[in-house]
Image (tube, rainbow, N blue to C red; front, side):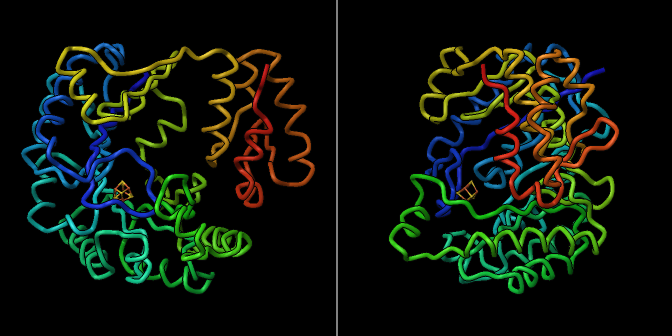
Length: 377
Ligand code: SF4
């Protein structure tokens, strides 16, 4: 039986981090109206997943830990009333360190939230300030300790490498600080400069100087070997887990399983089409209040299916299976084999019994390699 996931986007943040281009609002004026709209959307979109059972629920954002336990409870109750949730389903909440207090953690546990994804980003106060994060290093350390003390054994920590002024040694210190705790899962992202962000302005005006690309590549490669020494599997370009402790929600996404996205800007995929909600809180609320789901959608062509398969699978240690590509049609198999040859030749892709995955060197060029394999009419 094919299972499915549900993603709920909570579009509020305490303040705007300088590097962020996600959809959120700092004002929480519309919070209750938005939660009411989310509850309505869950009803309105109940047929999207075609009666599939839910194996993962994911509260992302924005900052879902800004929601009170009673607000989370109303959303969870609604989902339980509309969907069949599998026993042992993974229920994740993204949280910021400044929200993680013992009482709140106990409430989350009682609500059935069994996994946390903690946005630490850095243990360096100067960097946290530079990026306009709302917490400091002490908050971060205290929040991890609180999570461990509360008995959450499934949680993930986000850290960013490629920070201004960083090198391999300073990055190792960040990893060592996190590794003082029994963390089953990590996400490590490269600091990227997105258009229309404060960071973009700071970099352009040379108020912030990023490390050379070569230093970021060394930090990435160091992480790969250092985390392997510590027993972690590098199972997706940005993700590491102790054996078997993969993030089930994201893994299902990378493996092309269906999911429903609820809330402004959330994306959905049901195997044949993809849709995305309007990224505007006010217009989202108005539309839902009038009984209309505010989304745009597109049907996936065979080319889209092939490209999407590469885009998601090539990032993972499971790689691409030639059998899967062959099942999409001979034209795709031929295209794939013709275009992958140079990467096999220079060692950036490894082939093993019909499976193709990126080597460590290949991961550094993942986007270029994947787009080099795309099918364009
Ligand atoms: S807390 Fe997360 S979503 Fe909110 S502004 Fe910062 S990075 Fe963006």
